[in-house]
Length: 103
Image (cartoon, rainbow, N blue to C red):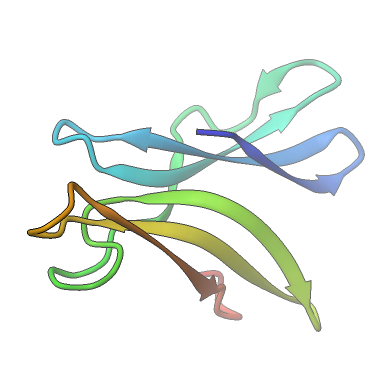
């Protein structure tokens, strides 16, 4: 999946990327990297967006799309994957907004 970078300050960027779990479901993580020194600041990736509850449009995986700043709030657009009975899978688009407490 294509990584998504958000500039924080100077050479510091938050990089969002999708990684698959042992069942093949995509989950979105982020790392903070200093691109000048090519050093990852947080050695353990942080889960940024998990899969949805059973029955939701994103219950079998998520992949990153883009981040839009709306009045100082981050709105994260992403694709959700779910399994259907008639076709192998369905892909839909959703959005998630970051709460003011950072969650």
